[in-house]
Length: 305
Image 1 (cartoon, rainbow, N blue to C red):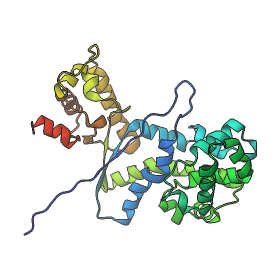
Image 2: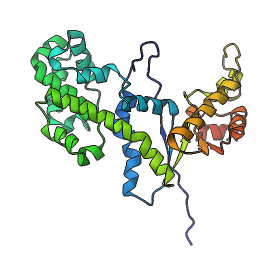
Image 3: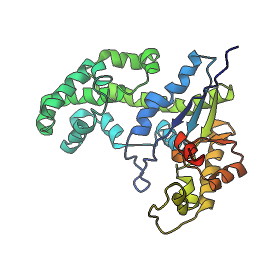
Image 4: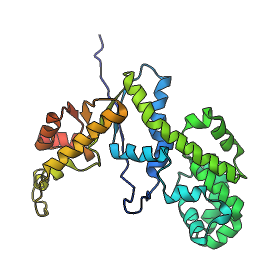
């Protein structure tokens, strides 16, 4: 009999906390963009493969951001300008769009949409003159860029199965303000699907959900900054600080969030950046965590190999 190999895929879903608590605005769009392209689709595709089991590690501070986008309470300058009527854009706003709305892989993403590729070639030829480029594109070109730069991040599932999204993609150019508004509504709807999808799959036993400490702190350093000298002897260290009680709160808050929002009692935890120490492992055990994930480098150093 051939020996069996047990292979476990652990997908780590993480974004920094982009919200500026002073202004209430998100500084960068990546939580929203990856929610459109990855966080929903990578879980939902398992419905096509009922025998496959996966483990997803979800960072609570990322899910909080997705919740706010789903509820229409999150705003970032990229989304705000993608939805603003092209005719009303100020010169600084237009320059922002021309600078950042081509942030996609040219060969795999931009070229998929002929109009996006056309605008990209215009940008490549004239990006040093944003005012001249804006005049050349005109409001119609800017609006096409506003829509396509967002649509390019939509998961294949929506491009294939959502009639409104499919129609937007098929249209390809000459978008209207109504199209912009539809694109914004679809983003909110997709974000609203993320957490319920993980909750549903976990409840059915199709996936295991683990968590990371709530705001992604480096737990060993939070417990004791001097622990750095164990892995890096001789490294210059700051004035020592020890806040193991804060580490406990970060871990407990993550476990509580998973119970409340995902309907699970996580058995596992992916500590931020795979950072572990004896003190961290002891805290996890006290809180009921049965496994933690780290990497081969940490394991090798621990075993002196």
